[in-house]
Image (tube, rainbow, N blue to C red):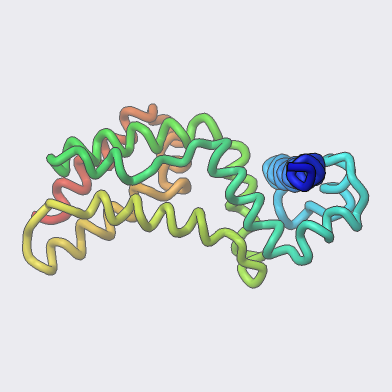
Length: 201
């Protein structure tokens, strides 16, 4: 009984210390995401991340020993903040055309709400391909793509054409180009749904 009483405060202290470490780690990831959104990954320095997070440079390195680790945490934070869709609810819609329409409605809404951060971050990523750290986002987009290619039918040639059209419709750059050209999100969605429907014929 006495031993249990002694160990409880220690477990409590360890729990509070871990919570503080987790909070600091999350604050650094959020600071990196904010800076990536504002100036882009290429122009974001560790010193700027530390200043934004309210910590020292060595604290950033203690949590994230390299850029890959920092980008992984930044990507995970950004996906939560931007509310990148999950594929499960899309797959629950049986009709592929209805599923596609719903999916592009949701995704283009996300693109609209996060146009500036996505545009700034995606602009710089090709120049930082050797760093990595965006695999979670890439995997999610692949899952969304797979969910939209199910249930269409047709021969191999028509499926290949349709899948290329679906991949094009999912790209942020496609939405950006269409809406910059004067289309509303709904018009961009309808154009892509029509294109994909015709692509496999």
